[in-house]
Image 1 (cartoon, helix red, strand yellow):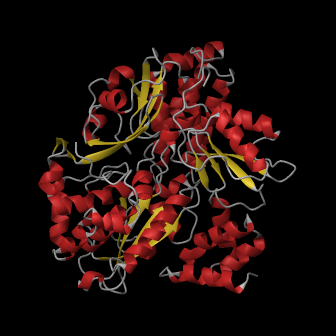
Image 2 (cartoon, rainbow over the protein chains, first blue to last red):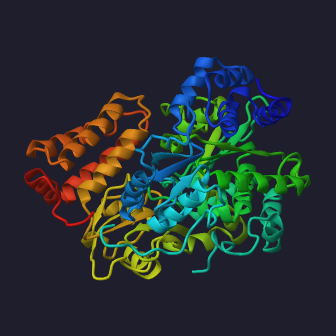
Image 3 (cartoon, rainbow over the protein chains, first blue to last red):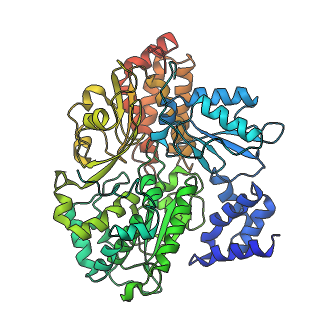
Length: 175
Length: 426
């Protein structure tokens, strides 16, 4: 179902492992990177490549939260809502994003641009709160930085600042 | 203390093999390859190095369980646990993203000591940057002859594979992690058999944390007695990464001697309390599964395995979460309960049901619909989950719940009586 170059990349991944079945997750990551989600057809392809049953692959896809079975927006905003981010005010940040984009958690904007998700601890507790946009961690986030980021992405521009830690923020009352 | 594990953090080009080697990198590997593997294991034993992932098991002792004469049909494996998912923990990321070659050198020295022919680095799926950094570093190390066939002419061959997780906390548990490497859902399995007898694909396997493995080159280079001279006593040794988050001015990862006092870490290294004039209320000392400490219990507490255990909690991953007096402890506990309910793999009934019920009851209390009986039910549900499941996730959920209830009972009672928190803001 994929082109030759993609199949070659898949074979390179398979060659890293002593047993083919270990490549189930790496191949699912590879597919999702390309397609944005894992379709049933892709599950069958992974099953064939790795020599396990399609049901086995489906079991893996549905166990691990990072694998998605449907298309999301172009930019998936993952808000970490676990303790350290909570203590640094992620709830306000999330509420702001929901209001600004007019969607709830798990929903995608009608233009297909943004999806909001909440996730468990991302390991960015010292630079909390963190918002992971697709793969990238945007850290030390506050409403101002989030607005600037979302506005740029919505306008089809480059993010106004690189991923990673931001300037040290000071909490506002109510955080 | 002289920085060891973080000595290359902040150095320009620290991710590259060129800079790493300029600063003495991979010299220890060359030294190790000339040693008797068992002598390395003895050195690590003598250093007192204990696992930095949370359990604190002596690393050298763990290594000594591995077969001494592996065969091609039944090879030895080393797995580096880089799943780092315990809430509040972000220390391994510092090593992975800033000094990947230190981790690789640690993996290689350790694998050689255990006669392992393959290393899997299991990195949590969300650490995409870390995975890329490691992949690039492995490529550089392979080119330089430190990874692959006949390493530095020693006759010993070893390959390193980075394996990305998929966003499941449970895969930080060693048997679930191995199951995940085998391409399956991350359900933990019963021990025994222990990984050293029956690990990945049933082969002898040892699983060590990123920080643990990163200590190894320094132990080989400088000797066990140097390592053991740092820390509280002979059972609590070496440099330690402490990650501080929450209500402090300067959160971050700090490398300090094992057993540094908690209040020193908070006040001197993490910059003290975030909001002027707001007092410390509570600290979670070792990641969200470890029992919470009241402010009065933090004074004079040394952050090492045995001292924190004596205080009724655990050093865990040394993920210190600081909360000031404005914190709604019931809300924090609800958030922790949600985490464990979300992350339970569902295999064992007490965990699957228990974590769900703890979250449901806490939600009810937070909505102002709790009853006084709820508090006892919460404690009973938590008590009934402990010690009876395949893996410790149920305990990880029960411990904070019971400790929050015990130590902040008045806040829970206030919620039940008045339908809200006694503190103004959360």
